[in-house]
Amino acid sequence: MMKIAVIGSTNMDLVSYTNTIPAAGETREATGFHTACGGKGANQAVAAGKLGANVMMVTVIGDDLFGEKSMDNFMENHIDTEYVWTATGVASGVATILVDSTSQNRILIHKGANACLTPEVIDEAADALRECGLIVLQLEIPLETVYAAIDFGVANGIPVLLNPAPATKELSMEKACLCDFFVPNETELAILTGMPTGTEDEIKKAAMSLVNRGLKNVIVTMGSKGSMWVSKNDFLVVPAQTVDAVDTTGAGDSFIGCFVENYSRTRSIPEAMKEASQYASFSVTRKGTQDSYLTRDEFDKLKK
View 1 (cartoon, rainbow, N blue to C red):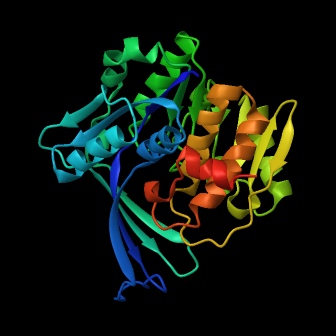
View 2: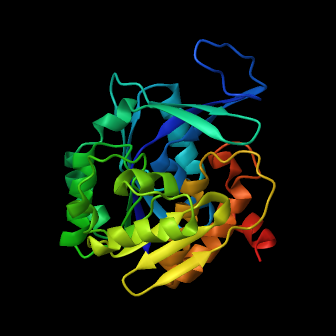
């Protein structure tokens, strides 16, 4: 099994549950609250780690209680923390999350220490990164660091998966086209292409527009509709498993974590998508983000 490097964000999630998201100027009583380790990078690393992948995390945490909890969490989930740095005098990243009674969410992110994950960090971790078979990236860290990691992967023959989340039109598509995998959800796909993504046909057309611009493999996560793979020579839709959703927070990250774990073993995109779609479906049946991710034993008992 190849080693996976996740270069990305670490946050503490502050999650409030409510029957209805408050309107502007409105105050409502929450029906529940909890804190949990999060951040797109950390989520994807932990999902892969829980499934048994060999994962190293490259990230920056704050020198506060949230940072300490994040470090403990990485170690509990068997993540290599050699390149988890602590930024002195800087708060950890925080995500404030509201989840309504339909399981939909609204998220507000403060980057905190994630803004300290500069391109120099890639240079410092270079020897360890060269031992990896896959680099996984998101957009909750500075774009120049994302570009440096992509360039590093290309220079060293290491495949790169980019999850363009949160989506920004500032993302260089020239850099994105250097990646082997580009994994947006349908909302991010719409933002990046300027095209509608309300139906599967529209999603296919939008994804193909990116392939025509030079992207190798576009894999779109579509929530309850499953996932779609579009490349120059391939098209595949993998349906999601039907479940009773409780909380959709972090479902896309669980998909990516499971996808890279499976792909690191099988090198099969269809097989990795099938397993990842099931894994993400199970994640929304539990509250929380990383707390909702199944271990390998739990997943093997449930999957079809």
